[in-house]
Each structure stands twice: as structure tokens, then as C-alpha cells.
Image (cartoon, rainbow, N blue to C red; front, side, top):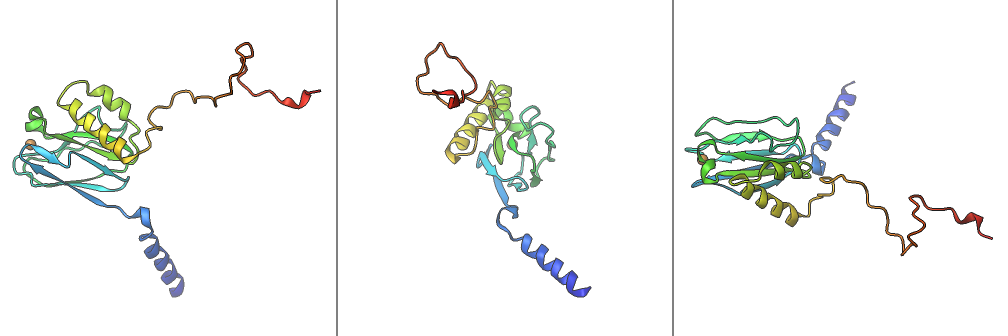
Length: 176
Ligand SMILES: [Cu+2]
């Protein structure tokens, strides 16, 4: 019995070290009336920590976080940590300074709700933050194909005559 327990313990120990399951902590620093870095790219399960917050706070912006994500709101003048499990873009603000543009973005995994966030932020200060997020997402090469789930584009068929508009390929077995 003892050895079984030992074995199980070893397996769990090893599992906790297997690459992608390791959660990372990302630090955002308040500098003047800005968060640095403005956009943070993380993996699901990672934590984000805000530091140097003497006259600031951080709170997620309603409508600019993934659906059913847990919102957060920190108290003024204190460091804060949040763990994010749900994929998507999270826009947050410093309540007293958002008018001066003090906000930021966290992208967890793939930006699955990017379109919704863009739509929810037509004007500054959020427009600017979302624009920076888009830039960071593009630069990182994150998968944005999950964002727009439109009709899959059919494979391009070599110049098919327009009179034969078929959606399914014809079996060519009936050829003479
Ligand atoms: Cu602030």
C-alpha cells in the first residue's frame, strides 16, 4: 500500500512539471497613469499581478471580457492578483484614471471574443486599448481564426464552368 501511494505521489509530482501545465505569473506595473505592459498575453490558468498601485485600482470592464468570465474589482491602493482560466480578451480599467486612458488588456489563450470587444469599444479610451490589443495579437501570431466562425470557405475549384454549380464533388466513376 505504501509503495502504491509513493508511486501515485511520484506521478503527480512529475505531472506538475510537464510543460504547459505550469502556470505563470505576469506582472503589470502602474507607472504614472498607465499600466505597463499595456497588453499582456497569457495562457489559461496563469495569474496576472498588478503592482505599484499607490493611487490606482484594476477592474474588468463589463461587456469587454469573455462571456461568463468572472469579473474582478480590486480595492484602491493595493496590489492585486487574478487567475484567469477562460480564454479570450479582457479589458480592464483603473476606475479613477480611465478618463486619462489608464486601462489595459489581457489576452488569455486565443482571443475568441475579439470581435465582441471591438464592437463594445467604439470610442476612446477603450478604442485605443483594443487597438493595441489587436496589434499585440497580430504580432504574436495567435490564432484568430477561432474568432470569426463564418461559413467555411469551400476549397477553390479550378475555374469550374458557372453552369455547373455543385456544392458536392461529383464522383467520376460514371465516365465511359
Ligand atoms: Cu489609476
